[in-house]
Length: 514
Image (cartoon, rainbow, N blue to C red; front, side):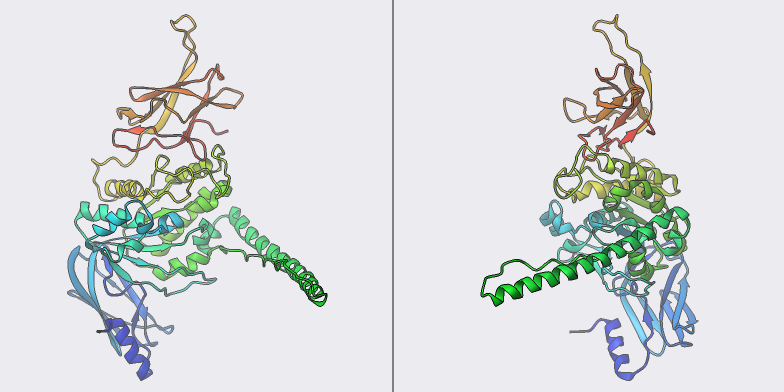
């Protein structure tokens, strides 16, 4: 069996004792390079070694620095589905095969972005029909690091029935929509880890931009201190247990008590995933990023908008490609907690609001999924609607397909409709809620329109009776004789299915700032 060219070069140099010319981890067989933008190519060699990089008609030369690092930048490339070679020449030669040029997207976040296609809906059909050799994914191995790293483990793989089951479901289905619409190769850099908070993905530099972020470091120090105390307590409990066990054995008595469980070490040191799973990617040319995360920060929603914004701005600065598009998935409906959660709580609603507020950053967009969650599962298996809504954002806002809607109707305001006791029948005071665009028809699949709540000056919200009137919704409640505020889908797991003719949901909203 023929060894991959990069591996073969590695083995030859290992036997000769020379330091190899080696590309960064993203540059491997089957890689996808970003079209229409300058393309950095970098790696390592002996300090002072001359390195030549050839791709197509371009040949660039450089010299490795004192630290052994070298870098060149290819001029913008046209999209190409024709496999090409990328050649690195120094003391050794590395020839990377089957390189394509197209669209590259970074997919990151926690478990719902990491979630594999073979664990989502229709896995058998999706894998059977995954014959897209121009769609490739590279999965960054889960890695934590306390300082920046330069390499990672992972390999580019084409989307085939044999491979695609392990791809990120959201990222693959997103890439498929782009590939079919744009007719160019699409590469996905999958850097994800389930259960991770946003602060683990943020650089120390970004965390230093706001004094308010000091709480992140303080919380980590407290976790370390609490863990040290727990270890001390565990050692004492273990000593007592061992003495009791020895005494029972000395008496010839059975001893069934289990040993004390060791305390779990604290996880997710701030910046640890940025160092281990983002810095090795810098500054790979890409079109943009898609993100699905927030579940692990729902209890700290007050921090999230600023932290999430700092992460986005930090990544953009570090990749050095301007304000590249950054699109994310708003949290779906879930009762919260893996055990008996509270579906009527509002911590997830508040996290969704923090995500929405992050739209203040340029070149951002949000895929709303309040209608496709799973009340009982924090990992909803319906990933195709998520991917398609992200693809709508990208196709409209990044690729100029302006005839394609990328959001459901948005809350635009309300007017108070005074009570009319003389009407037949008498009409209670109500609110007429309007949406933008104003001409978008509203639809609801059930006989009863649910998810709306209203409140009076007492700020106590009550479920509202709601009805659609053309492109507005009129809401009232017998418990609220003088309504002044309205909310929709403002719960952890609301019964909310209002949308438009395209099946795009109305995003959760509230008119108040209470």
